[in-house]
Amino acid sequence: MGIGVVGDSLSLKASAMRESLDRSETITDDVVSILGSFDHRLSALDTAMRPTQIRTHSIRKAHENIDKTLKAAEVILAHFDQYHQAEAKIGKGPHEDVKNYLEAIDQLRSNTRFFSSKNGFRSVDGIVSHANSLITKAISKLEEEFKQLLLSYSKPVEPERLFDCLPTSMRPSSASPGHDHSSNIHSETHRNNVDTVVYTPPVLIPPRILPLLHDLAQQMVQAGHQQQLLKICRDIRSNVLEESLQKLGVEKLSKDDVQKLQWEVLEAKIGNWIHFMRIAVKLLFAGERKVCDQMFEGFDLLSDQCFAEVTANSVSMLLSFGEAIAKSKRSPEKLFVLLDMYEILREIHSEIETLFKGKACTKIREAVMGLTKQLAQTAQETFGDFEEAVEKDATKTAVTDGTVHPLTSYVINYVKFLFDYRSTLNQLFQGFEGEGDSSQLASVTMRILQALKTNLDGKSKQYRDPALMHLFLMNNIHYIVRSVRRSEAKDLLGDDWIQKHRKIVQQHANQYKRNAWAKILQSLSIQGLVSSGGGSSTVGGDAGSSGASRTIVKDRFKTFNTMFEELHQKQSQWTVPDTELRESLILAVAEVLLPAYRSFVKRFGPLSES
Image 1 (cartoon, rainbow, N blue to C red):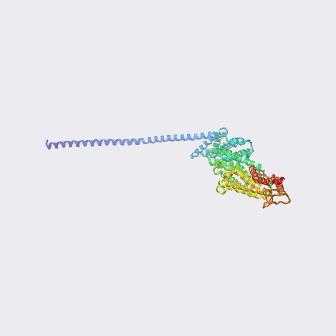
Image 2 (cartoon, rainbow, N blue to C red):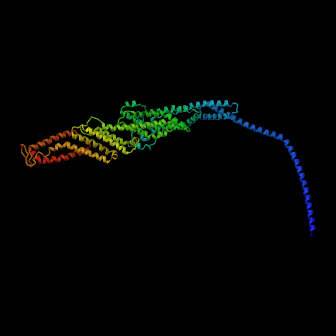
Image 3 (tube, rainbow, N blue to C red):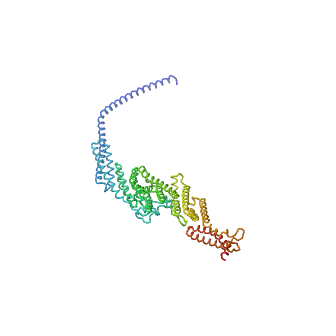
């Protein structure tokens, strides 16, 4: 194919494409014209519809506002209904149905909060004012209901019921008010097991009542009436608690009252007081704490304050007796009851800290601790007085038979009792002298026994007969040594102390033999009977083979018999109370006297007989 032909063909195709493009532009212009016409008509339609749309929107918004108003009105009407229902319940009072009454008060409070939030509501001020007035009246009736309910279920606890709450080993044999518990004053076994015995506090208010009292109290606290609430509790529960203690036998005695009592009476009262303290703290106060905690659950500070106010008078009544004893005139026999009283306060210390917790109970805790320290101080001073009194005892009453002096037995019994209080005394020494251990008690015991020995030495000077003087000292020091060996003091004082004093006993026994029997032994001596050269020393009389004068021999026998009879008569009035010591002493005398007598009789007896 030629080039010309190809060129013609391309021209034809280009011409066809131009015609096609022209037709497309024409169609596009027509479509644009049509669409422009549509837009104009739609704009006109929208303009025509706008008023209708506005009216429809207004109608819809009006319906929405009406719905909201109706719903708000329904809520307000519901609160009005609730308000009137609560008002009706409160009008009936709480006595018939306390639970509904409390619910009505809560409802009124809810209504008050609701109406107070509706500032635009025209009658809101009047409604809120009336509701608050109604709540005030309701709380007033609630106070009276709380008071009557608490009063109805608050009764003094009888002693028998309290005794049943004690561990079996601590119950008195005769459960009656004022029963003498002095037999329970001090028990080493009990003291060692105070942590193992179980106390069961009595139920002071029925469990079913306490939740109701709590709900009433809660409403009163919310209303700001906590002070009125505390006053009601204090007036009712405090009196009941005091009556319980009085039924038990607790009495409030002053220092002057205590000073007037005979020792036996006072000792019994102290024994009872110790028992009462244990019952009061571990049973009555523990039970009262549960009541306060449950009534004021959720209000810990009020619970502490209520408990402090309810128990204050009872605690004061109990502590006043202890303070009177601690301040009364000191005497040796009071040391042990002071230690007993100190022990019971130490025993209940943990309970006091637990029960009387919080700032409100601070004064009570301090009062108990103050008495504990005061008793410890008085006990220490009494202990010092005793040591001094032993050394300076000026009793003129002498024991004529040389037996154990009453002071010795008194002091030894005193020391034995002290060892029943080893742990307590160690606490005292620790508190006042630094370290508290057995060496402190050993040191004190040695000082007391040394003071006794010094006093006995002074008393022995009253005897004109040296033999009786040494017999007296022998008896008394032997009694001390024997008592120590048979008591806990043995381990504390040690073998060295015992051996040292046994030697002192032996020394006095030897001195007794020397002073009592030396002179009579001289009458059995051959001195003066025979000459030194073996010849006769006769003076007016026949002489035997021994070279001794019959007359002098007879005089010697007569002298011996006379002196022996005198010694027998005199020493028959003397006493060695310890059987073992007495037998030992008799044997020691016999070992000296009998051989000398037998030798004398064997040698010079024939002269006397012929």
